[in-house]
Length: 158
Image (cartoon, rainbow, N blue to C red; front, top):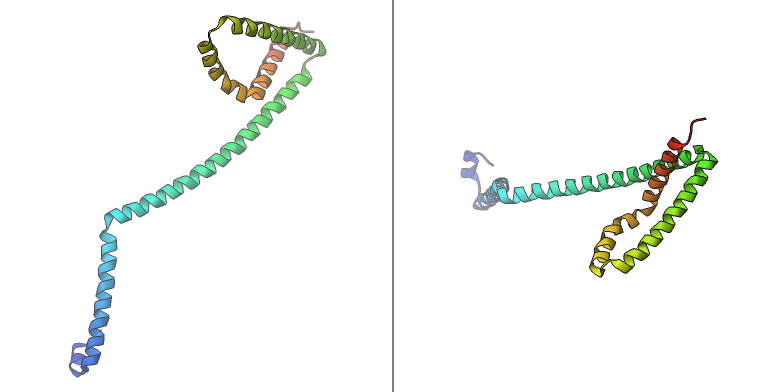
């Protein structure tokens, strides 16, 4: 802004330009103050930023969980293989024979189930068994390891 004594010597055109600049500055100041006092838009901006950060963090955590899950599955498989390698041949044969007997009994039970259970009960059972089927390999590895350990513990110490 010019000094008051300069305004007296200024031409009307200069005064108009000065007034126009002052209006623009005042408009910018009012706009800035309005932005600071508009709580709703500031809250929305903050919420958007927090949502973006949360989404990014959730993505990173999901990725880390996926990697960790793969590592744990590999470790469980490795441990199962090591356990199977340490089991003596007679115990493995006995486990194999027991597993075959269990499969035969399961097949027999399945036939009896089909003959005696109502359709509604079979449907509910199938829905309950779906998660086990989806994770079959992990369940079989765990069950096989448990059987081998159990048989190894039962075998006489030499």
